Length: 151
Image (tube, rainbow, N blue to C red; front, side, top):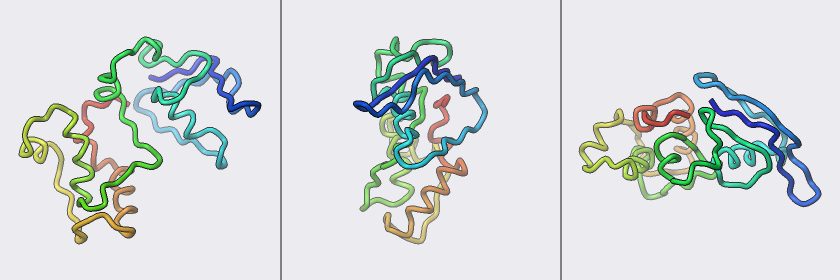
């Protein structure tokens, strides 16, 4: 569960949130919908501790500010950036498996075996394969790769 309590965020005179309180329950799916500049990405960045904010954000009833280690983000919080920086000379499968290198999975064979094979006719990321990655991520094909992520 993630709970925001009286969270506010402003950029100069422009206020995105004022005393926002909302709870995101575990196991449910939520959609952030809004026009460009309405604060969707900023909200995700605040939850991911990438942007400062006023108020309190709780994860499992613990204030996010109390998490000092980046291990929390590696092992508890799954986060896909809006501009997720694909490595263009790698295959789709290689791009999706890249985070496994930071998961203390020692050998390539173990990393390879930890998620299902992904077939692709294209050997590298291209303009046409980016939607394929989106579908893979949306429909959960990478779940085994991030199986330790709670959110």
